[in-house]
Image (tube, rainbow, N blue to C red; front, side):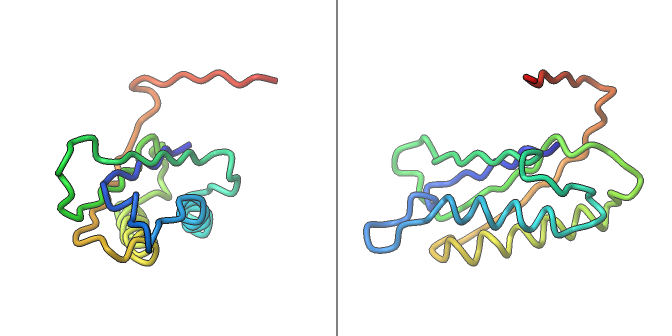
Length: 121
């Protein structure tokens, strides 16, 4: 299942316009689940991490969204991945209005190239 990493100083917002990361997480998950071609219907299968930019003074207004660990499947075509990238940019744009540039990268992943998981019962 996918990991969505969102990074950038604009995620902090400002005192008068804080970014509600809980709502952003909800909207990201809702967007992913709304695309039937992805075959993801469970919130538990989507992990969202928010990372502020760790470089002091590097606040150029850029937000990067990365979707990794989205397993290759025939129905997850390049067009579907592009539609996901476009949709996630719109979600972030709606929640982080101060962002000057938002980029989204959706990587394909073949689990045969190295994947393991542990689930506690």
